[in-house]
Length: 286
Image (tube, rainbow, N blue to C red; front, top):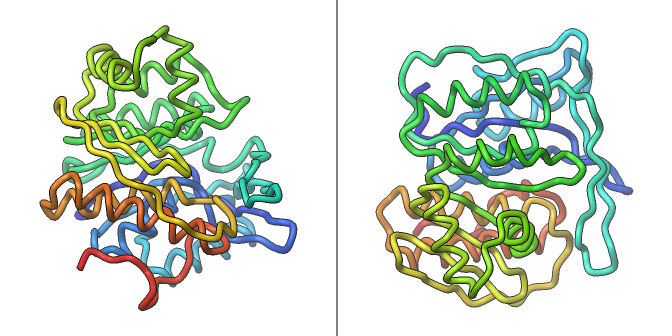
């Protein structure tokens, strides 16, 4: 793989009340990274069905490499039923099984510089074991924890955390971790305990209307929220993560990287779906 970033996990259709749109957190991150100028590829699996063909066509259209998109003869292309409340906050019903529950390990021709993964694709043992092999070849593992209940297994989650170097999390997920492993104390103390327990170098936390925080090597940086009219929150966190990675990889400081992350996340929340078209109004690295 010659890409700078490899995103591992689900690619699927987000099915809204008014139609369907391409989705899946790893695919969303991959999409935004490529749009922001960071060459990225996706490791996933689609059904050998019409829904899978349509997703392949979309990936090709937005220039996401499809070399590592596997096809499954038995399991269907994944889909998520998306409901939105009055404030555009998304709720998800994730169909199981899906083709991305059956991702097979295909040995890369070279080491992976950066691997981005979430917890959802590890709901199946097959995809989880494949992920472990890819993570062992990566120089930098980034976990977008992306908890989707009931698809959460604490034992598996602990392994995902232990192999991560960077953790992206939101407030609700942080509350879950704090209770699950009894972090206690202030937010800063919780970060320090997480870092000590899992040997993390970086933590990114989105806080909705309160902005975002980045902790790295004992330094904590905060970003103020951006006021927008929310259309839906689908993929906003994925855009946030991609914005941070893209800026961080070209050597920007934490303040600049967190600022771009916040801008991209807010921009996505102000659009319909997780992969809005980049135009003159979209945030960029310049």
